[in-house]
Structure formats: structure tokens, C-alpha cells
Image (cartoon, rainbow, N blue to C red; front, side, top):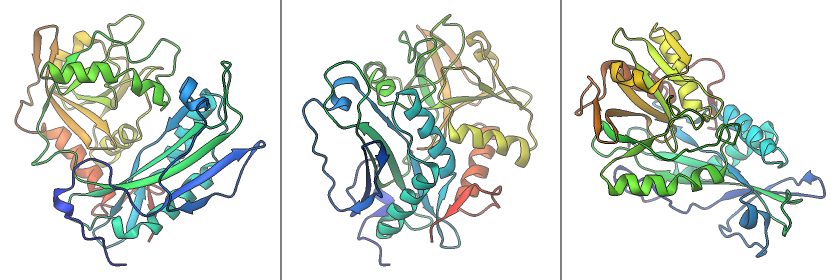
Length: 341
């Protein structure tokens, strides 16, 4: 299929409307068969559950053109499982894993002309989401729901290379103890908007959120998990019941252990330990790993030894290995790559 006339190398990380998206409705206690549609608009009643009580969950994953010309997605089964857990937590019907993967396959195949070519630095971002549709005025779950999945071509998260970020310790909590921090719900991201806007206004790239109970342990940022490297090259990731289980982080842990032979610890990380780490990164779908060079705690600076000019050596090896797997340059573990074409 002939590609769209897009300047792939100059794409930003934003929304470009593509030709097709997938829609399935849950009514009468069951999901319908689902269809591809060219209509990008949604019409809702003014009292829809999603508008009144934020009953919505979502996911994010990417499709890639590999070195040998295949179009693939990366571990969509884990996105499906995480969305099922998110839906169950908000009393929404789960969208079955097999149907989730089929929807991903259909949308990518139907929008093949928008899948960026290998080597362009761009990818096709996929956004599955689900929301309560029918009118709900009392505080209760909706009865009817819609699952949708659209895609948009996006450029590399970093233009001109991954420059280390400067982040601050936030005075806000991103999640409540025993709350919804471990699911991908829209309400978690709404609460982070003020914190990230004020961080940017003060010259910071992101926030570091501490645990909401004691505010002594590192949790995550508004949209990514932390990954640290000790001075003796041990990889450490924070563990907490209120951290979103990042698929990228889980994949990087496997890469560290099985591809690079590194020791990995998934455990509680006290904030007072941060000054002793050699490297720090934020891991997520958008950039895989965003290096962190400086953390500011109410005026007190913690400067990572890896510096403010480039990724640390271990972080770079992790990044290059995982992106190599995603792009087909390095053999992938069984089941990680879902081939669409």
C-alpha cells in the first residue's frame, strides 16, 4: 500500500486523524461484534456516565515498521490485560483480550498507509479506550459502554536526541493509598494536569511523586515509571501498590536480566537513596526511556553522575536493546512481537 504524503521525519508527538477506527458497544449485558468506521466523532447524552463521574479507562501502544519490512505491535496482550484490570476496578465490563488484539490488528491494517517507514524515527501510536455511555445522575456505574481504538502517526518523543530531564519533587500526590494509582484511568491523569503545568511554568520537565502515605518513597511521574541504576550497575525499580504497572518497565527488567546480564531489584525505593544512584530514567511507551539528569527537592539539587548531556551507559544499553527488539534488529522473546503484516 502506498504511504500517505507525510513528512515523517518532522512529525511531532500529536494527533493526526487517520482513516479508520474501531468501535464496539456494550448494551444489554453484552458486547456487539464491533466495526471499523471512518467517523471520528462521538455523540453522547449530556448526562453520560463518563461526563458525570469520569468512568473511563484507556491504553497506549505503538505499531512499528521493522528492519525487514514487517508491521508489528509490541506486547499488545499485556495492554489488553491491563485494560481489563482497569475496567474491573471502575465497575466496567472487561473487553476480552482476544478481541482487543483483533481490534489492534484491524485498525493498524486498515491504516497501513499511516504506518511510518523504518528508519524515519516515527511510529503509529494506538489509543484504545472505553467509557460509560448512558445517562447516569446518581453515583453508580453506567449500564452501557463503548470501546474505541484510534491511531495516529507520531514522531520521536525527543527531537535531536534524548537530553536528560530536570524534574522536581511534587507537593501533590498522584494517587491515594488503596486508590486507583495502579490502573490506567482518566481520572488519574486529570489530577496530574495542574502539577505538570506548574512544573513547566517553573522550568521543570516532570514531577517526581512520592508515596501518598508517608511521602518518603519514590513512586512515579504523571505518566511513567522510574528506573534507577546503582554505581555498581544494578538496576532498581520502585515497587508499590499505587504505581501503574508499566509494560515498558516490565520489558526493560527482562532485557536487563536476560539480555544484558544485570542484577535487578524491584523494591521500595526511599527518596533518601536517590542521591546515591548513578543513573535515573523514566520509562514508558512514548520514549521507552527518558534520562533524568537532575532532581530538585524544594530548592535542593540532586545531580546524577550520568550528567545533563546524554543518557548514562546502562540506560543507553537498555534503550538500544529494547528498541532493537521492537524494530526487529534484535531477536525478541517469544510472544513479544505481534506481526500484523
